[in-house]
Image 1 (cartoon, rainbow, N blue to C red):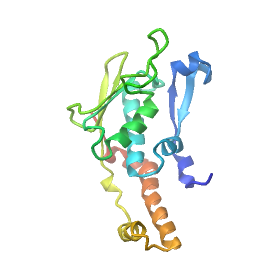
Image 2: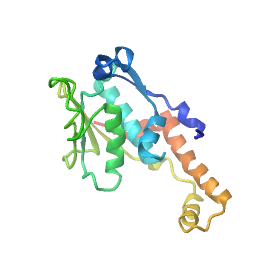
Image 3: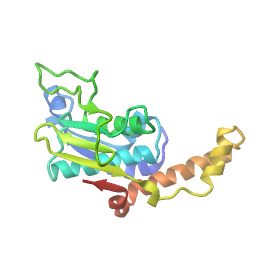
Length: 200
């Protein structure tokens, strides 16, 4: 399996998952979720998936500080409807990291460690995403704006040619390279994160 090498340079998000501990999936429930795993979930790597990953990271840091975030104990609320724009893509990535399920999520064991009903849409908020700890009700609201990392000027014409079936194999490869170069800068330019991610 070949993919851009920068995927492996993105620091994974460390969590503690009580359900994984109880059922013996991960020792002490300690686990990490990587950007590569989020790419597999989404089926692609783009600024939106990158932003969801960074919002999850920054949100969990705000909620848990130096403690390991408790996977499965976080409610994910979205300002917009699931069908609007990239809302579903963002929620899928964040809820995967947080261990949050919708109505069809894991119902728990004797009422414990349930993952269902931990996702909500169309929730009024001053931001795009709200993460709430179910144990303390502490919450954090996040927004993402990657405009500080602009796309290469050649991406738009190359995308047009690719979509119309007019691009050469070399042009298709170059489009993919330029697309991922922007994602790489978003994920690895840690000095820009505070300008791209608003935490309230």
